[in-house]
Length: 289
View 1 (cartoon, rainbow, N blue to C red):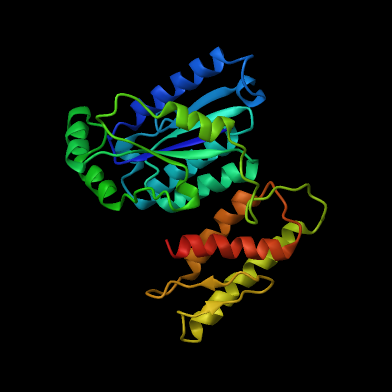
View 2 (tube, rainbow, N blue to C red):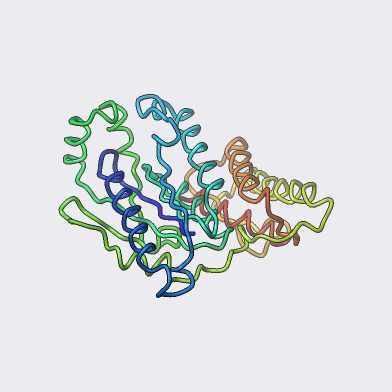
């Protein structure tokens, strides 16, 4: 614990803020080893996960959609491997897609650890200037990433609590971040991330069938010619809302199903109703984002 997600335009100062945050955590934890709460007195390991730590070349890893997908997969795997109740993980990456920030949020919720988002607010012209000076991203890649950037929104649960820093700020809101992710008790896991001990020998089979039935309900609804209506998928009391302006393809549904399975592959929801509802919630977020 906890998970700190940095987000911002390319070359907007995220790595600088990640290093500042790591130094703050190290100093604060060392100085309060015995005189504050139990949470603050534990021995935490602090990790920064970024392109450099994963040996990802910014000139290559963002060339195509396929390259970006591989880079995000490597980042997610590193977070899942490192994050625990005894580890602080600072994700120093673009994190420019809100759906990916939601996935990171789900990982934190599944483990039962707090999280927050630090948004490095920076005008595109200034970020462009810094990028030209550093050569971090080729100009074409910088422009494409900047156009697709989805700014964090404090009104959404996966971007909250949200802390905004701008280049003029001499430091981070350190005390507020400390209170939010060290002293604050994590929210309980939700339906799509809850962890329980495996008791059913046929769990994986039923999980597969349940999520496949949800996908089939979507395909059947689209064939009916009324994609704007809400769908009641099998076993789910949560209604599924299809995007009204486009048709959802089978390949997209399979991709989201694989992601949902990957998030929950080491955990069991046991009750297939909760599996169905968790998958519907996951689809609602990712199909309509």
